[in-house]
Image (tube, rainbow, N blue to C red; front, side, top):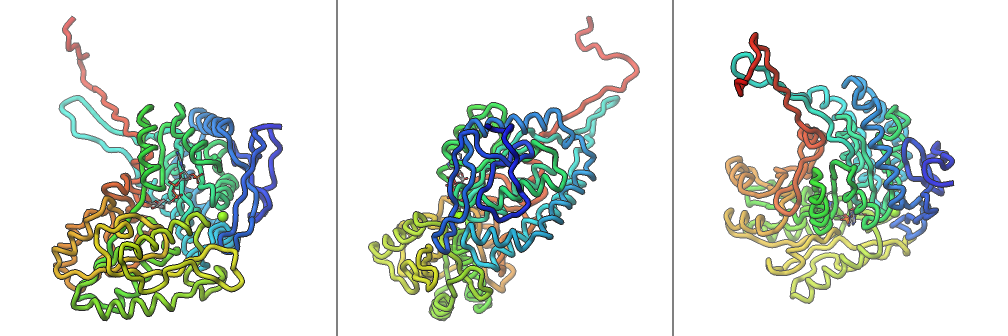
Length: 505
Ligand code: NAP
Ligand code: MG
């Protein structure tokens, strides 16, 4: 049997040997019969088999989404009813919190604390949008005389949502929650390396009452299925989170059909420590800023600039603490740093560190793959601190996406701002200072979508997340995201006594 006619698979347990595509409310295998494996990066072992969508499956998913959008009831529900379903999704996720956390850890190799935090944020994001849509509405606009104008926010239609491997459940929630909140139908393409929690989230949404066809999940190859969705005539919008080069390709392809596009792309975020900073807080926050999620974060603060007057003290303590970070069993509560996503990424990271050495930089901590007892076949990299760099070096310019930070001293505020902005990216940034006027000045001068002030965290549900420059455009996680999933329709009416006859004939 093929496609949507296929026998529905059992989705009771979240941990399974095989995971299906989720199309039109059913968990099914690919019409092609193809599957792919997903691995546990901490051990290198095969974790599960996953149905691998073909373009025929993707087409079926788009057709299901289109049908649900045009003929279904979801977008016609009163807002309160949709909000209730979003709350129900959050409730089921809370009930199954430990199972989702376990699955996320197994599929990504991330630490328990990181996975718990991210699943929590995914849940809270559904709750946030359940509330946010209640206030998302059109406007009544000033008009002369007998005219009246108001606007309606209508769902944009069928959205393709393509997500990366570094925060699978969180990225899925950032995409799914606002889109379905406003009444869109969606086709989600998870990353091939980490498809599991997005698949189970789709199933949970269905159990919570999202009608068939509104949410479809199609794990499969980016160049095949992802690209197919971007080019599909029946897709109205593409929301993409991933690397800058693929984002550029997507923007070019989407222009053929003038799809709406939002892009959350890469980063090389600066972290500025001024001489008036609380140094211990700055050290703790800077450690978290780069090494959280094993450095595999788009907003990882990977360029650390410290005022020369406090540079030596900061450097000494920062390096000492970096060496204390504990790598190991992701399920251990004491583990700070989880695994690298796969062998390929491990090689990429090591390649960057080697290039830094060849360019004459100095490795102050780490600098090579790590051997972890009991996890010898997994992918691990030592938290790495690099000094003695110049701004021309590859390690300073390019996104590494691993636990590697460069550190440089600066003399003056102006120089710090110049260094911070000397990048093609503009996603995150951090300022450590106790001088309010300086914080305001520097924060205003940094060209980035996010400025963290004496704060190690970049986002909570409700706070806008997105980039300047080549970090993309559009903001997620916030109220304005709802605008990016809606079209504004202007309704202009005439209520005059006499008919209008502008041509006079
Ligand atoms: P990626 O290689 O760009 O892949 C992202 C997604 O796009 C995956 O689902 C991938 O599928 C798919 N894809 C690949 N080629 C495609 C194509 N030609 N057309 C359509 N889709 C395609 O990025 P990644 O390596 O997974 O993730 C790391 C990157 O994401 C980093 O650059 C990071 O900074 C960025 N990121 C940004 C944010 C943000 O909010 N700004 C958040 C997280 C991550 P496959 O998995 O099958 O290749
Ligand atoms: Mg995996």
